[in-house]
Structure formats: structure tokens, C-alpha cells
Amino acid sequence: MGMMNSTEAVLDEKAIIASAESALADIAAIRAQIAKVIFGQEKVVENTLLAVLSGGHALLVGVPGLAKTKLVTTLGSVLGLDSNRIQFTPDLMPSDILGSEVMDADESGRRSFRFIKGPVFAQLLMADEINRASPRTQSALLQSMQEYHITVAGQRYDLPAPFHVLATQNPLEQEGTYPLPEAQLDRFLLQVDVLYPDLTAERQILLETTGLSERQPESVIDAARLQEIQMLIRQMPVSDTVVDAILSLVRSARPGQGNVTTDKHVAWGPGPRAGQSLMLTARARALYEGRLAPSLDDVYALAEPVLEHRMALTFSARAEGMSVRDVIAGLVKQARG
Image (tube, rainbow, N blue to C red; front, side):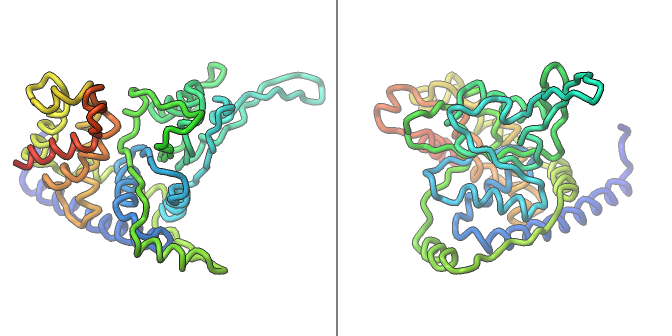
């Protein structure tokens, strides 16, 4: 691409600012609709939305009963996406997710195969309790998350666009769970920890959800508009300061890079995808907060959801009762100086 002359550049910048401002308005409306039915949990709502606005998938981790499913269905209706839900169980098969070939016979008895699409063919897919299914079934889903198409009996089928997976996982070391392998966790742009609601939110939940009728969220945008916002986020400029902060934070989380505490406590650290995730989600967070360019604050606020599922502690650090979160908080504190 040739160099733009300065008038073109100014026009271009004006166009980007104008479209960013209309995206800001849309995002504010989306937040308002979600707040009608999901009380408190601002950070959870924010991080889940950031994953979708950045074009990625999110893993929601929390004990049962914290409205994770409700959040996903709410997102589906507010973003105008066609959504499906799969409850993962130990006996779930890959074909239960992807779909399968059935044999048809016409009047003359000629037989042919026909593909019946599984629930993965949705724009927003809720994968409930993903760690309850066998590794083989998990990888059927994770492959589609990575490649945006599936292959059944040698035939390729493209998934709808946009395609987002919001998976939930129970943190309790419950019976009959298969933890996701590291390489598969890396496919999730963000890990969103869902904690118990605070007192005011829990009071509101009691009052609002036990009556005869519950408020319903309205749709604010549609799939095509979501894709426009996703494109816009990828066009937002990122300053060198922010890029450098992303690189040094991600690299500081890897053992063998000269960070003393990391070398002591971290068994393996985040790969390059972590930096890519921070680049995308920092821009999305800026828009979410009503700004036109990402700042260092965006990077540090997203350190935990981006890095938490991409690194593991050494045995001795775990024995001392440390958590990955403690380590990330320490790295952020170092980075902030």
C-alpha cells in the first residue's frame, strides 16, 4: 500500500473517530440492556463482552449457580446473535456437537448421505461445564474454535460468522471432570473468573428474580454490526508505549527471561498468543470505557484474564499456597513501578 498524503490521513482519522464514537454509543446501549437482567458482576460482564468484541472466545470459571448461563443467553439476545447451548456430559460424543451423516433412501431405493448440522452451527455457542466431557469431545469443539470450520467424513463445513464460544467450567475439583489441556486453554482469549455477588447485587437478585415476571433485555445490535465493531477494534492505533508494556509484561511471566520471582514460582509461561490477546482486548476495553485509544491501565487491568490460563506454577509455589493470580498481581505491580 502506498503512503497516504496528509489530507487523506486526516480524513481517515476523522472517519475512524466518527465510527469509534458510534461504536461507543452502541457499547453503552449494550451495557445498559445487560444491566437490566444481570446484577452486579460488572467485571464479569465487561470481560465476557471484551472477548466477544475482540472476536474471541471466553472461558467462564465459577461455582454453579452464579448466572453464567444467564449471562450468555442475555448476550445472545442483546447482540442479536443466533445462539445454541450444549450441556457437556461424560457421555457426550463429538458428533453430538458437530453433527453427523445420515443415510437417506429415495423412492427408487437409491441411497445417499445427508449431513445434519450439530449445535456448533451457531454464532454464539454456550458450552456448559466443558470440563465434564471426555478429551476427545472437548477437542472436537476446540478444533472448531481454532479453525472456524469442521470436517465430517472428509467434507468441510464452514461455521457461521461471527462464531464465538463462551464455555463454562466449574473450579471445584469435582468428581468426573477432565481438565482442559494447556494448548486448548490457550484458544480462549480470556478467562473470566465469576465470583459470588456482593451484598447489594445479591439483594437485587432476590428481589428481581423471584416475582412473577422478570425483565427481558432488548436486542441492541445484530451480527453484521458486531463484525463492524470487531473490525474497528483491529484498526484502533496502539501507541509504542502500550506495545512495549504488553511485550515486557508477557515476557516477564516466562521463566528464564531474567525475572527472579517468575523463575522461582512459574513452571511455564504464556506464549505469543497472550500478547496478541492483550493487543486486541486493550483496544476493546478502551472503547468499552469510552476512550479512543488503549492506555497502560487497559493492559494492566487485562493482565489477569489474559494470562491466568496461560501459565502454571511450580510445585513448590503451589505447596506454599500461591496462586497464578498472586504471581500476575506481583508482575503488574513490578511493571507499574
